[in-house]
Structure formats: structure tokens, C-alpha cells
Length: 62
Image 1 (tube, rainbow, N blue to C red):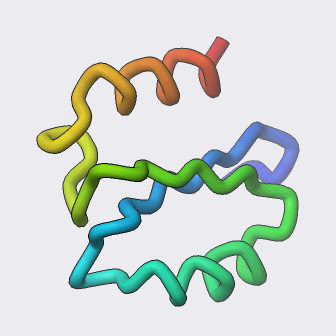
Image 2 (cartoon, rainbow, N blue to C red):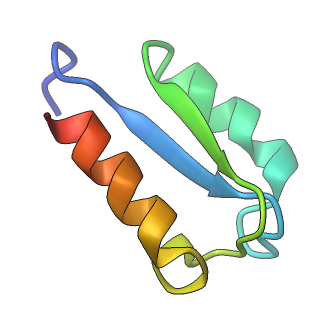
């Protein structure tokens, strides 16, 4: 991945596969990334919060 491009990590607060406390490891691996918390989502924000997921993707790619 090109580190000059914007990286956004989306994480569900209700995720039971990748626990919320593991987000710090993801941020350590990608220190320039922005972390977006999906407050009412589990592991699949595109299913749980499709409108918010779409908005985050569009915002990050424009």
C-alpha cells in the first residue's frame, strides 16, 4: 500500500471478532491512519451501517 495515500480504519464498537481493544494494534501498524468508530456496528459495518460506511469511503477517496 502506498503510504502517501490516506488510510482510514473503520472499527465496530460491537465487533466480537476483532475486539475494539485491538484497534490500538491497527493504529500502531498504520500510524498515519485515521480511526473511525462505528458506534452501532459489529464486524460488518457495511451491513450494520451501510449509509455511514458509504459516507466514510466516499469522504476518504475524494
